[in-house]
Image 1 (spheres, helix red, strand yellow):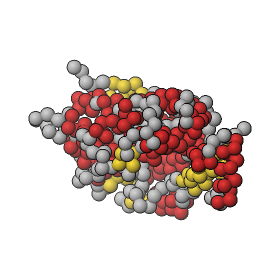
Image 2 (cartoon, one colour; image 1 turned 60 degrees about the horizontal axis):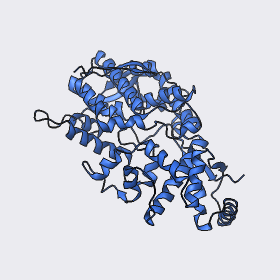
Image 3 (cartoon, rainbow, N blue to C red; image 1 turned 120 degrees about the horizontal axis):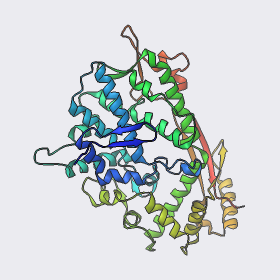
Image 4 (tube, rainbow, N blue to C red; image 1 turned 60 degrees about the vertical axis):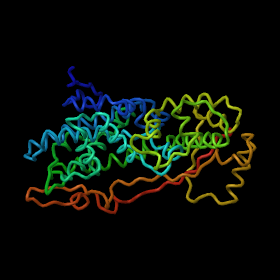
Amino acid sequence: MNKRKIINDPVFGFVTLSTDKVYDVLQHPFVQRLGRIRQLGLSYYVYPGAQHSRFSHSIGAMHLMQEGLSMLQQKGVPISSEENEAAQIAILLHDVGHGPFSHVLEHTLVHGITHEEISLMMMEQIDKDLATKENPHPLGLAIDIFRNAYSRHFFHQLLSSQLDVDRMDYLCRDSFFCGVQEGRVASERLLKMLHVVNDHLVVEQKGIYSVEKFLVARRLMYWQVYLHKTSVAAEQLLIKILLRAKELAAQGKELFCSPALHYFLYNHISAEDMTAGSEALRQYALLDDSDVVSAIKAWMDEDDRTLALLCEMFVNRRLFHGTLRKEHLTKAEKDALSERLAKALAIRKEEVHYFYQEHISTSNTYSEKADSIDILYQDGAVKDISEASEILDLKLLTFKPQKLYLFEARTE
């Protein structure tokens, strides 16, 4: 069987699966599941074109990894075929642990564990599934790169840093499907400007303007797309739905849902339960967007008014109304809001907290604590982008603006 497939990607064109092992990883059910999970969660409520999947993002990021490694090899950086393949597999699997609707499950159905940790567990499971007598750990090197445990640190930087192929792809891809211009970055030029100095990824001086544009694009995309008020409102509504369903499940009420969703609604799943080979991980790998949406559609007819009303609002896009605030609600304001919502929605006061939520949206462009973005000058000097840039300084780059919103159910 020919496993050297070519995939036609709408953003970058033809993407090649370079080895048989890459193909085998791509075919694994854990990876195929990503095709049933939207990359941007609920952003389609704002941008109707935002229907692309985490699978397509993973393919695109793998392609950029191929391009970046090829460019480094052309510049004399020694990279073996095993390292090349492992880095491609590591980026292909970097998001494999994501649940439906982005980070919603981390706030509702799974506790004390991040999607990055779940990704590592899934990689370990895939490693076991693809193992042979001749090669008992086919993904060993890929897992080491993912964990930043490999001796050559720049491989992990390509995978996860402040200028990595993950960010390059999602900025280009998300802006393409949302129909916005702000996220379009010069990924090809950025990759061509990469080099390695003392096992650290750097950008040649000629690429400084592309780095500046990359950082500005990331900042704009967060506030225009990822943290758009309406997208956040939809996410808060979905969280309330799952929390109410979880509460009813704890009371013994039987709700319609898929076996995988039922497992997480009716069990308290924590980090201790989510281990490689566990039932919890198996059930998690069966969860995708369709499980949640089909359940919500059915719950519109539940006899619990709170759950039914929340689900009807979600399905028919009567999302929470968001108001920008300077300060948190006082007790008097909360009491007044609760009374008004309870009366307008005909719900009990003890359940009114499902219909409003205070939320802080925040994002920073650059972090001093993470791997820096370093610029390589022709004389061999290396400077942090905050020093090298004429238009960006450290204070502006690391500033972390916060927006406090009050989201509440519409009553009109």
